[in-house]
Length: 456
Image (cartoon, rainbow, N blue to C red; front, side, top):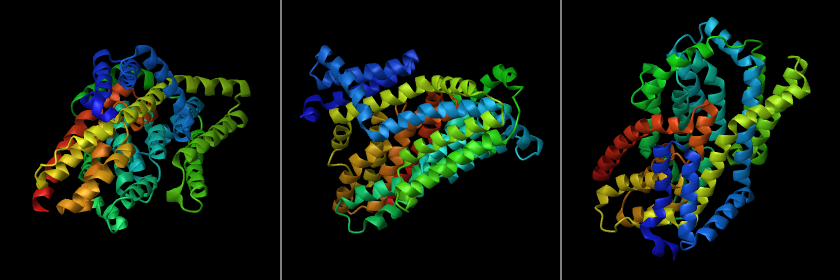
């Protein structure tokens, strides 16, 4: 009923969020306005009811275990990052890597997060956090912007996770495909890997950027800003490498152990959100213990530093919360379903793969979720593929790549927010600097799907 009543108005809230974010450069305001406008549509234009429903929907976010865990670990990672930075362990590691000539230029500094982001495909949050936290000060040392770091980790974690499907992504996608009329879901899912053009192209562009050390567009302006803050990073506190390495390795190993436990022996079936939350708590305890007994810090000092770190990330955690609220409102409005239903049934067959990619990108962009896009579109496009004689793996690859593309471009995506958090980068700057790269890869991808549609 909402779908029929509101029609194109269902895409108004996310569009408002994007316009206000760019115009006012205030993302929290943009999200609040977008959520309130969505509630106005849902309540038939009653502002009082819209306000009450907006507050209730915000509270309801915490009823979802996954959302609560993401918010908690987003907050707690601030304590871990601050403890590691204040310990001097980061400075010690940077000094060791540079003095030993392991990392002595921008190319090698960029390769560290790119390789980490491409290697950890079990969980995207683990990939983003590990790559970001370990590389922040190296990027500062070699006058590379945090925006470039955010781009590298954001554009490796999801593409690699959607290509190497032995993880939670693969399990979810397989489940969605299993609910469609295709005869061999496994073959369709793994057959989509070579057809996921966006993921392949994005990874290629990331490594080109890292190896060539060339940046373009707004990213270049962000790099120029590094000259003005050079003095603040000339002297980095240096103590012992283990103050950084032990907590970081504890986090990685704990996540893997908990993924194994929650997956009952199958790491690919484990709970990523629970594992990351538990692992970060353990890592904070380890970091604090090292500083208490080996760094001569008092318990009171460590407690204050933990709260200082969490306080620094509170604005970003608020953004994640509001992104969840807006995503819930979009689902209630039926935004994704409406956009999917807007495809004409009289489109030429050769255009379907490219249009599927664009549609998936638009849904993910406006809702801020790639997984939600999978849930909306996979059940729609698989029967279309069978009916029109299109390779189901081709259309599935278009859905998966398009969802990641829209997620990359969206300022309301939790992955976008967490990437900027892990890199220590302003959210709006991350969105602005990454968007040209995402659009470039997306344009090339559309061309590939048009060709694939013609020759298939």
